[in-house]
Image 1 (cartoon, rainbow, N blue to C red):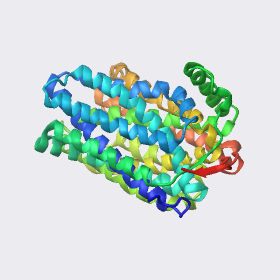
Image 2: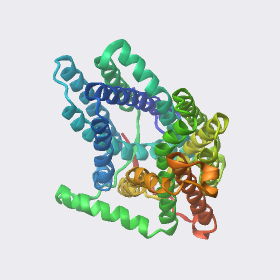
Image 3: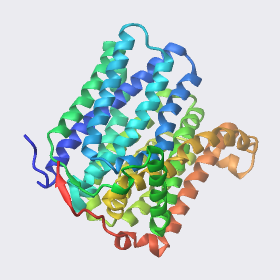
Length: 441
């Protein structure tokens, strides 16, 4: 039986439960796969390459994938994506059970999954708007942030336990089952859709459609100053968050005398903060103006998170900073996603969001690439003086200086954006989403 659409948020809740199961299952499996790759090869290069091939293809192809996502039913596409991810997990089970699984299989799977997950995310963004509507967007995006935070906290723990108890095959079977749960929740839920498909593109080649779609998405953003400014803010936020992830580990280890247990506790508390932040976002976002919340959240997160960590020399400071940084992220992300969903017409969303995703997340590999070399260069300057007295000497001091500097720059970018009338009033001035002509599927 089909669940009725438009019955408040109930249809969204049903799909959210299924997609949360898929998110948790995927996180558990990915943790177990990367752990198996490390145990099998003992190579940090092999592990980093696996992470890179999973991340980069989907990131770079997102603007072109979006052109095709806008041409199909988002529900149908999500069904195909969940089914394909389940099939991939079962294929890995077969390879592992017959002793044929090797690292190159994981490279191929990682790249394919990254691309499929990008298409899935673009379609899911449209489904959220169709089910939740303008009035429920913020609450729905808060719950999605909660799901992501739960995966961050639970996936490593569950992945390690399941890998020890049932082996890689057992973990991958759980992964496949989780995608089938997501698929089933989609299949029985009625989702409205627009009937407006780009007929003028029907005879064009896939490459031509991809290029035209990327140009359309980029042009939409470039023509809107508020969206351009928000994209710059989020590029900076992603840079700060990534630098924080890269530099916090060596910083705490060097300042704590290699206390791995403390580092694990700091990381875990950040995840707990994310869960509570996602839960809070689902109740708070729809009551608050989103643009000020994004900018104030970024200022607060930068200063109480990575900046406090850079100055900290004790466990209480690092624990509090990790919690604060984790707490604000789902709040900021939920508000940010809601703004874009409200501002971009539904039939253009995948094209625009694909470009947005690529531009904003290019900060991640950029930050990873510069963190190490910058630390090496700054460390030679940390022998004495005010900076050495404040942040320490050598590599630890350099990591602290860079982390603190990134946090300050991030906060300044957000503060400067608050002074911009076009950004500050974006909630009021951005055009509403076009949703007319919807049918139910």
